[in-house]
Length: 421
Image (cartoon, rainbow, N blue to C red):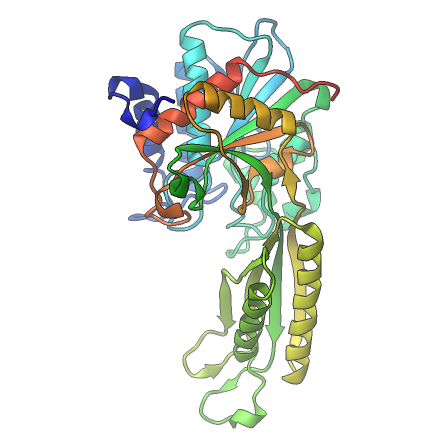
């Protein structure tokens, strides 16, 4: 088999081009000195404008939709034909790496650019989507862009507010979007043939196998909880330990209990990624504590049981300390299987590039999960250094970027609609 990591510099032109674009997107950040690009933020706006400029330079129609997604359409042999949708997201976590999400958007753009420069039209259209809200950092509910595309967007989430009290509705309006037009973003099933997403693995499997890319078979289901514990604030020096109702201490005990539960069940992972104590003064007993819980498993029944058990354990801990407890589910996504036919097509494209195909599951959630409600889906993973992600140390090589774009381009050219859908 051909080892793409040994190809010459000239052979890696697509990878170089993708990496240059990724570096350009890296400059659009809300926090100087690090990459933070939150949904509907000024940095997101600049990234949108950059993408629109790239597409228009290629002579390809592109627009910002009502949900804050960038949509570009490359027509097929017959204008108005059903589309194969390709894409990923351009929002980031705080202090992020440059490849999570962005690689999938740039890889799709680079592949379609090759078709456009050759005037190559396919029996179907291609739409490339840059979703704006995959990470769920700014607002409690995530995947709003891909849910809008799939027709499963919940209008109630328009009233959600960020840390500054800004509602999603107002943020969309300020961004130049029409919140009341989100329903029209939804595609009809007969308009879409399938969805493909290129994404870094965010794990160590491909690196351990010495492979640049892998074929995703399924995505773990996930539940996110927002937990609020309310006790009584008091003076740090005057309230005896035995008379305190310290919300933060209760939260700390709860977090340890959550970790112990996840460690006891193979295949289950649980993470408390954010915590806040109020009023947040050095000499005040915290009267309120808020934290998030992220629970994931490829087994939906296991995840459901874990969520119930976490609720029971936290309830017992709060009752023992006379702390008021409120748990809100902010995100719920069932485990998602990639369509076997799409998996086979991506696998064949990998093999045609001279690479050993490897199938693997995704522990992280992706826009693909939401789009699966609309059409058959598939994903291509790309090796990342040390499996590190959501971190400035996130790295891929130009050789692996090149392999990903070439596999994607091959899969697009030979794409076959799934029979009988």
